[in-house]
Image (spheres, each protein chain N blue to C red):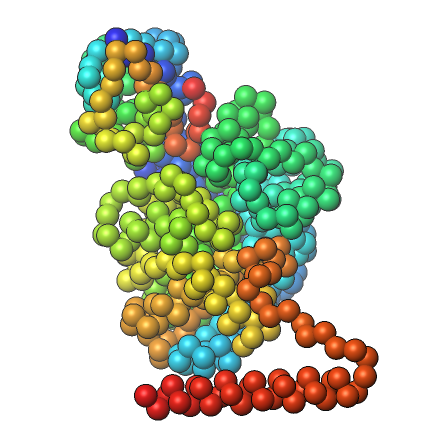
Length: 91
Length: 432
């Protein structure tokens, strides 16, 4: 299962965890599973069905805006990082 | 530190509007929206007047009540109040009626508009008790933070991409700052700085001090309005890297309007200039998109504008649209032509970003986006001495002669001959 890295400012909503396993074969599916496990994260990451404007997501250090956004495929061994745009890489 | 009326309410999230106290924080913990300084304009009315401004120092600090400090500034006391040059020869060359150059190429002390933002950010850093400051920079900010930090006795860490112009690297190291070149582009340097700022608790001017820093750019707009005789121009063309400056110039006009300092309402249309090799914001405007798609590998001689993932790109594109402006981008040859045209018509040697601004203005005039009969201000933000690499192989070298009058006479004859040939070609061309 892909591993999702959670940045410091979001850890209050992930039970203090800095990472979590979440199932899915695309970034969208993985983040959906993550926010099913941690419902308080949902509104921090999403504005409706879209990622919030200042939330960036990386798959193995590649910005998904250069890939296929939320439809970017994810392998079970991949690492998905959530990085607030203005807070930089404080993962 | 002396106290004066403080008109700052706090830091407000630009997305959700939630208020936060004045601190070294640049994002809203709820939705990661950028924070912006929020003022009590009602309290300013009657206190901030044309008279109070005219009685102030000949620097950006004549607008101090509209900048986010609690006390008097401690860093960069001489920054700003640069010339607004009526550019008649350039206006003629471009075929427009009323054109001005806001010339921050001669800003004190480091010859770029960045001294404005750094003066505010470092004065704020001192207020907040920071001893160590820093920045991520494409060059101009590096020099400005290094110089102003040196003068203020602050330790500085400057992180830059490892491909910058020599003049900009030297222009930071000379002040004794800790300059670190990072293998990677600006966006990677910027992300690293965010980690460093929060990890070590340092004041990075364009990271955790960014809300205060960005406000410094307003002083460029205040000066334009005051120097035009308390009115705002029909159009402003500003270069865009992170996309902050263009928004702050417009904000400054709106603040003057709110305080009743202007002769008429603000109808200024805002135009943004980028290089084609790094055009995430102009591309957003031109494709009428709602999302800024970052540029992965910026490639332009305008290195000071080479920010592929601009922090304020979304807001800049929205502003351009809402004011009825537009955005364009230009290639390296057009940039060099722009630099030369400004130098040859107005005697102002701007850096590559200035070439971008001028070349984009020319394009917008030809496209009809800029009107030939309106007042236009070009924001020139940096000095050509710092980006000599861009021109060195593109400008004619001096002719060499022996120290005799005969040599000079024959050279003069050859030059006159060449000039008349060129003039003949121009006339022949015009006849086609």
